[in-house]
Length: 417
Image (cartoon, rainbow, N blue to C red):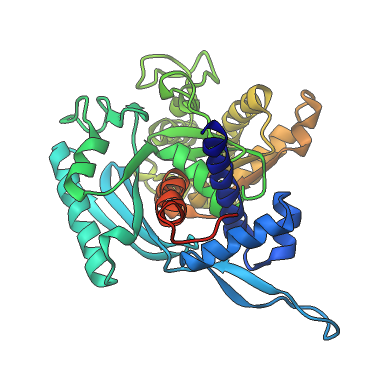
């Protein structure tokens, strides 16, 4: 009996490995699959045949190459084999996306969601959007693999709870996952928004192909981070990992919203940067001053910096300096191959990422600082929804495979490998 259970478990693991490899490398031939997954040719043929029978993969023509010899058939995932739905809740908005089995974004919407809304309003809005997707694209609920949600912290990923998020005053110990599962009748998973942005980049963006990457989310009012290693999010004790916004970068700096002084979040916050720039202008540090210094915006600071304004340029370089301290600390602690800067600040300031990279590479220790790549996000504002979709795929694909593939074999409907 034990041998039978072990055999079944091994078969499932092999099938999941083959499917995951097809998804990441499609179109791919069976011979290339054998080389990548390390299974025997017979096992790969049997597993792919069963995936074909289950309607999860399909043959997608023949591999390219010379005209001499027979070309191999290649496999790809059927884009309609299943679907995923992802959400991102942030201050003032709820974004949502629908993707197919190949991870392609079919639809994306961005709607208002007032911060004073009650938790039940989130469930209402999610149900409305999900039903809208199903109706628009004529999808059965059973074809939805699951729903992923990117949420602000603090939260408990395992229990599916959100605890007193600072920007949602009506929320306290909210069982978001259970609430949404009950409303939708679907599988639901959730994580912190910055963690999911990191996961999205490793699935679909600039981090794809890297073993370890760190994502820094830089906004006007908040900063967060997420570490992904070998496709897995590092959560830390009580899901507290990645709070880079509250890393100390200047002990003489202003007080942060968390109560400490000199946090990264306080040092590059819009309010603090503008206060400094206005002060420098008013003390005569530049001849070409704005007509209305007090009306100066962060966008204008970035524009003037790119045009060579010394005051605004100094402000941007100072921001890059504080960020480079944080990135250097991250490299010392986690040694990622890649650091991705995302959020509105890198999008608004085109020179910011390059300045951070330049400063980090000038560090003398550790020596591999100069080899760590620092790049801007490739997914932009959609990174958080894409991360929620990636989480749904990662979390529920094994369950879907067990239901659509292995269980049918137990009922005598397929071949044994």
